[in-house]
Image (cartoon, rainbow, N blue to C red; front, side):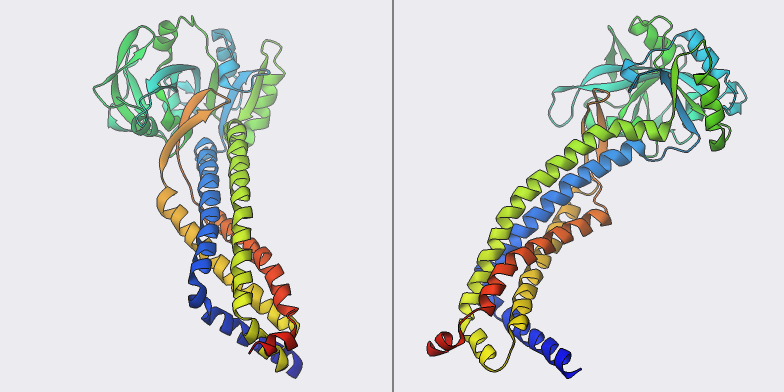
Length: 399
């Protein structure tokens, strides 16, 4: 037992001396900490963008929510259903029923141009025409200001995220739909979901404004139970009168977010990786400076019987401590400045804007700390070897 205890005491002693000497080389140590903090802040903030986007697209969707599209369509934009199609879909077994019939809403999805509040430039904003059952299908949707649009009226309601991101989206204002100006009569929330980025109106009125006849692009529905999905899907996909695909809405929305989240994650890791290379060289420089400044001290300790292993571990622990300080600082900055920050971006699978909030999760903060620790350990390894290989006799002659 004496051996291991003695070794740990040696490591603790050498590490203590190293940490106490940091104020004497605070310039290089501070540069290393700031460099690592920058890496972590960039990594966490960019990845929090992807997390927030994915959360908005796929969050808050119950397991009994389904969507039906034309067979082969991977988004609503390229789907198309006729009125006879939507009637057959609504009559399929498995839908929940309300006072007015099946909880199924045949919907039309179009793109309108509206100016983005932050830049003033026009962007693609999704507009959805719905049927009466839509508010029961999406039972989390609530009108929080004003009132719902009138059926058979050229009126719209806008999501809370759309109202915050796009200019002129307030009650009493108008937006251009087709060739006419339609008044905004209400603002709605959808429990943080993607619908909050949309503009809603009566599907019949929207069909007329865009000369869509009696066509739709999707049917959204609510099943009697989540377990009825397979029965419902089989009834539609085996019907020779239909050519459709049936998905759970949560799975569909998750797939819609895949391209964007992959792109954001790849970009975030690439930028943070390039910065990490620079931060690693900064850590190397800091620890080489530390070893050079402590040459006599390390040689004296070695002469007193301190082993090479304890010197290596102590130098790497010092580097790790500086890196963790930088990691904590970077994570704190990312959380303070980006968590909950509202923005919008193009969803390339629907070619429309989706408004969302950055989401700095504990998992992302842990990932940032792991990156910081890796930079510290890599940056401290070579200086630690150099410290352990210092020639004792020549170092002591300089005393």
